[in-house]
Length: 468
Ligand SMILES: Cc1ncc(COP(=O)(O)O)c(C=O)c1O
Image 1 (spheres, helix red, strand yellow):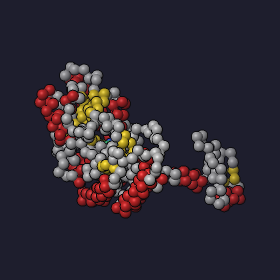
Image 2 (cartoon, rainbow, N blue to C red):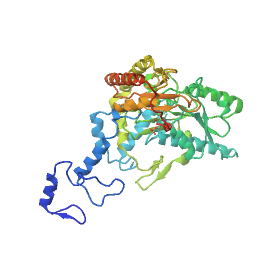
Image 3 (cartoon, helix red, strand yellow):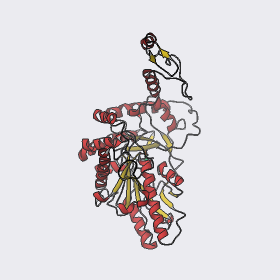
Image 4 (tube, protein in one colour):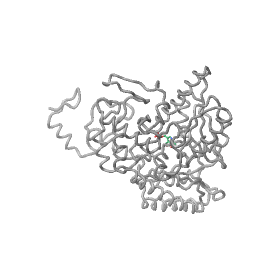
């Protein structure tokens, strides 16, 4: 007899009958299971697997997802490590001391890559992604400012953070969740990224910091960190305010060190106190890992670090979550060992070559005007050329490409360019020249189809604002 649920006991014959069922005719497969209530009893593992597997099949194909920055390909050895480490909780540092040591090695390597004056005296941590890293970096800015204000006998009630209107949503969240006033510097045709001009109008004694983005989400363009820091130097000369810079290098902090090694955007710029990146973007790891590094211990107020004893030992913890997968940290270390500096350079250069090739082809199409060419991070965007058509928009093109499996988002730019709609391609490791050719052929075919229409496509109403 085999127990299949608390109440039902099946004979071996019955069990055999179940196992003999053709796949898709096993219990639960010939009917559909409830979707929003937990089923009363168990399913065979094969059945449950098949149902989940089949439903996930309806998602888009990750490799054809040109919208995401996040890793969609790793090699077989990485896959093996992932499975082997799937049960490791990063917070169990006393129990998994090697994973903990590897985590520290990873952010120390990043500190060195980002030219920290003394990499071994920096402080950092892994996170779930750049969003958590941004929360921690933002909190450190806020807490440092609060301490300084209180020490000077001044009010610490109204902190603000200055950044481009094109910041990723994580910074809007940071300000919302932690009661910081966001001060957005609008982008414009003359200033398509935050470049330091006009900063004095936004910065005051309540400014906890300025965020500079290495690889603006909307377009992939770098913000000139040195120019932003120089503007803050001038502000300091006239007002005495010493405002730190945090670099959101979600993508670019894993690209610039390899492709633009001469560009000073990192700890070489004295005002930069902290940097975040997404290990799961151009760090080439599957989703679930980010990093934040502070220039030195002084940049991270000690009262943000907790010490817990219930894991054994005295364990410092810094992070929004307690438990978190440890596997991604091991995967990051694997990538560092597997590729080294030269390997990373080659992988990122290959992505940039594909990006600049595809952007060149897109730029030559009469329908489009390039916004940028993918030579900062391998990401580029385009808009419809003015006067090209009244019949279709980039939203229609996005839908048409989706029919062929390509996920290429169209979205409005942020303030003050919200009337401009762009479409963007993110080139990642795994988007080969061959796939790029297939994409271009489909793009040309769909543009030709839309151009052949004799009347307008139905209007696109109420597209949600884009954040990625
Ligand atoms: C500039 C920038 N910052 C932060 C994020 C958020 O990163 P994550 O998805 O790792 O939380 C992104 C994501 O695209 C980004 O482009």
